[in-house]
Image (cartoon, rainbow, N blue to C red; front, side, top):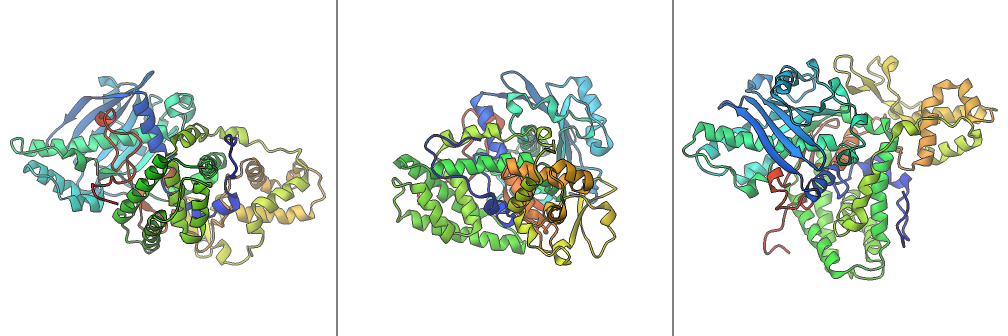
Amino acid sequence: MEKSAGQTVSPRDPNHVMQLHRLGAFHQSRLSFMRILLRRLQGEVWTFDRPVFDIDARGVGRAVYSAHGPDRSYSLVAFANDLPPEKRSDRVIATEWDATFTLFDGVPTTEDLDRLQDNVPRQEAGRISEKELSLSRANRSVRLWDHVVECLSHGRQPDRQKVADVGYLMRTTAVYGSGKFGAADRDMTSDRPEFLAPFQVEMLSVFLTRAFVMDLVEHMASMRAPDTAVPLDPDLRRRFGIGNSTGLGMAPFLLNHPALLNNWIAAREEALARIRSLETAHAPEVETFRRFALRARLHAEEWTSDHPVQIEKLAALRHDTATLLAHLDTVDLTADMPWNRLWLWSEIALSVEGQELLASLLMEPYPHLVDDLATCMAADEPATWRINGAMPLDDLRALVEDIYGWALGIDWTAHKAQARIWYTSEAKLEPRLGERFEEDLDAYEQPLCPGRDAARMYTDLQTSDEATVAGFLMRHPEHRHVARRAQIAGRLPYAEIRDNTIDATVMPIDMLRLKLSFFGACHFDPRSDRWVRINMYQHAPFPHELGERSGDDWAYPFLTEGVV
C-alpha cells in the first residue's frame, strides 16, 4: 500500500496499534464492510424485489428477497418458524431457530426452494450446494417482537424507548460462508466486483435479512387485525437493526488470517495518515467533522451495557466526546496541519476509546482519501504461506526481536502468563478457551499464542549454528508455524497481534470487537469476557430506500433541529 502524494505523516507504529486493549477500542468507519457494501449498491443502482412471500398468520413459511446488480442477481431465501419459547437459544448447540436463511446465487426456482426447505432450517444438520453462498439463522427478541406486533395490530406505533433499549427484532446467532456445509467457497466469488472487499456475501445476507424481519413483523400484525393494523413509521423502522450474538468462534480468525488482518488495519492506518498529512482543511470539511462529532456523542449516549468493562469504556467514551466537542469550540481546524494537531492533542487528552473513535470520525469528511482503500482489504493468503528457507538465520532473529520483542521479556514459566489454553470442541468443532492448570487440555492446544511460541523459537535460535532458516527448521520443525508468522509480519507490519493471547487477564471480547468494528457493527454489549451482542445496520436505509437515502451516511444517529 503506497503513500498518497504529499503524505508527510506515516501510519502508526504496529507496536502501538496492535495491542489488544487498543484493538478492542476500534469503532466502525468508512472502511467497515457494511458501509462498503451499501455504497456500492447505491452507486451501481441495484434494484430489489420480493418474488416470494408465503408466510401465514403464525409467521411460518418462506420468502425470497432478490438483489439485482449490473451483472448478477442474488437472493436471500428465508424460512420462518413458530418456535416454542423453551427451544429458543442463542447457543451454538441449538437445533431450531425462529428463522433460517441462505444467500442464493441468482434467483431460485420452486425446485430450488423445495430443496432448500429440506436443508436450510436444519442448518449444520443439513447440506446446501455451491449455488448457495451463505447459511444463517436468527431468533426473535421476544418481548420487543410481541410489543411491536401488538401495537401495530391496534393501529399505533411501538414505544420508542423500548425500541431504543433493544434496537432489533431478531438477532443472528451465526452467519456462515466460505464453503461451510456445502456452500460455495470464497474462491468461486472473490473475483466478482461486488465481493472483492471482505465479507460482502455475509453483509448482503444480513442487509436483506433485516428487510425480511421488518416485513414479517408488519405482516403478522396485519394478519392479526387487518382492519386496524398499520405499518411502522419509516423513521422508527430504520431504528431497528439486526442483532447478533458472537462468541469465541470469531476470535481465532484474526490469528489464523494474518495477511487479512494486516490489510484491514493497514487500510485504516493509511487513511488516518493521509488525513493527518493534510496541510489545510476547508470550512465545509471542518463543519462536516464537527457534525459527525455531535452525532458520535448521541451514539455514545444511546449505547448501554451491563458488563463492568464496557460500562467503564462507555464512561470514558462519553467523557471523551464532551472533551472533544469543547476543544473544537476553541481550536482552528483550517490551517497548519489541523488534523495532525488534533490527533496529537487526542493522544494526551482522550482515552484509547476516544482516540480510536476520533480515527473513525476523521475519515468522514474525506471520502476521496479513504474509500479507494476498500479495494486493498482482501488478501490472497496462500500466497503468503511459503516459508523463505534461504533467509539468513540472523535475519529471522532480528524479525523476532522486532515483532515479538514484547514477548521476549515475559516469564513464560509463570502460571499467569500461560493460564489460558485454546482448543477446539469435539461436539461443534468450535474454538474454546480453557484453564490450562485446571483442565487436562494440553494435548488439544491450538497454536494461537504466537508470542509464547516466538519466545520458545528465539531460545533455540540463540543456540543454533545453522546459517539459514531452512537448516534451522530441519532441526526444529516444531517452530515452522511461528517462523512463517514472523516472515509474514516482517512483510506485513499489522499482521500480528502484539499481546499475550493466553494470559490470565486476556479479554477475548477485544478480538471480537476488533473484527466486528470492521464489519460495521455498533453498540457492543459484552455478556461475559467471551461473547458479545451487537447491532448491525441500525439507522441504515432499507433496500427500497437506497435511491432516496444515503447508503453511506447512516452509522451515527441523525441530529435533530437545534442540536449544537
